[in-house]
Length: 457
Image (cartoon, rainbow, N blue to C red; front, side, top):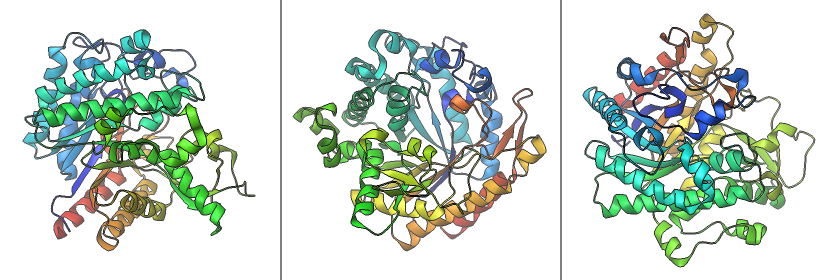
């Protein structure tokens, strides 16, 4: 086994930092969205969240005690460039410098995500956000600003987190910021997100910055309901609409053929120069993985209505029916616990994209708890982590999949987007009134997992 395997945890700026108006930070679309009545459970916001902005040293200390080697976090664009395009905010640069230096002092390698959904609000109001290629150009400058400020210490960069969520939930269903609803806008937004990625990678490579740069996309596994050709094709096409939609372009330079065939002119077209910009524009593949469904061409008796929401891409464009096994356990988010689906997903990525290194940049689960005591005694999550990391190690050590890292989602309970503080994904319990942190049973289980694997590496 490679000694370079990265064991870590992951977070996102808006979900943990708080300090939403502190030290010159500008507003993001999630600041606006969370303050819009009716959008977030119980009217929660990320104004304070976990107050990581002020408590980052304590949080890094928890990571050190956990024994992880790496930490994935995102930078808030509006903390660096408040309006997304104008003057650089030195206080924002200073905060992330302090965080990065603190991590390195503890021997923890920073993995930095440039964009985890919190677009500066000005770019949404003036440009319609990701519906405009102007936003992509502004992202290029923002990325270069970060490379210049932090590139002497950060050597692992992720341009975007889960473009599927930005495009589909933000511009398709309207569930996430900026809350737009359309059948066609998700494909336009995704197109400009991909171009922004290509531009940022171009800046990184032409600037000669050290290290590697890639992108993280989310995908659930799709297991054919039966061994029929129809169901096997349905499962394959579902993953292509979900993962390959946003990964094929950065490796092959264009969208999957099934999407062009199915969508026609509704799918934007890359110019030859854009294809050249995108092709090979990633040094690794990031995977965020949470659950599994059965896929079939026609509805089965077990098909569930809620499973439609789990379809990658726009559901009505796929001609795929999703279902589940009634024996599968479910998290409090309603997501199925299927470790073997994780192993198959990793193999699918390896088969399609040859020898690209893979980082599992998110994997975890939400566990319901009515009290602090119940939340800390989270054996369900501990078992989830054992099962999924075992599946990863089988893919890595038995199947030969080049998995280079695993980042547990999440380090601590935080603002879970439209669910507010109702859903807790953390291996550390957070009291959102006192801000006290308490390691859970899953924290100790994950520490044992990491220690055991590092001992044999």
